[in-house]
Amino acid sequence: MNRRDALKGLGLSLGYVIATPTILSMLQSCTSHAEQWTPLFFSNKQGHILQKLVDLILPKTKDTAGALDVNVPQFIDLFVSKTISDEEKEIYKTGLDAVMEELGILNDEPLALKTEHFESLLSKYLRITRAQRLAYILEEDLVFQTLTTIRDQTVFAYITSKEIGENVLAYNPIPGQQKGCISVEEATGGKAWSL
Image (cartoon, rainbow, N blue to C red):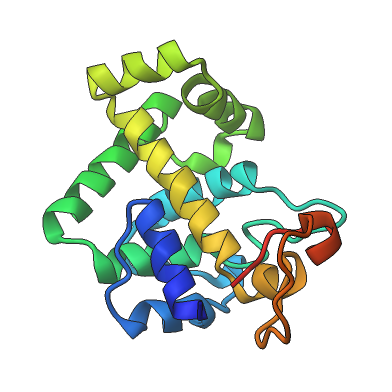
């Protein structure tokens, strides 16, 4: 299986359709630093909120890069601006506004918020039981749907980034031999394959 097929399969499993080679180039093109980033699709306030959420969803550890280190917010911004319909874009922006309203900053500056506010929001909507998840789905809760989408897109962008694919996941662009019926521990040292 080549990288394109793997990404296409991964994208379909997350609910996204990777239809053009443009998406693949977008995976590598997000190289600007977060402090210099000006969103293409999101407002500056929405971009700031997205950065905070993404950083809490996949934070940097001593051994691995975080979502901000591999430019996940920039990827999500580019991905949304280039791949979804105008109607879906409007729903996405409305969802981010609902998230800001839940945080109590729809008309205020988000800089006053502390990390605890974002952690509380993520706990309320994403660290929940199956029954709570079903209740949010049945209510068609816009904040829940938006945070779930952001989480899914964050994971998708993170695991398909060059840094993570080559340096964290097991990476072998030209496999040499097929070894059947061996453990993942023996094959890759316990790492998932990036291809």
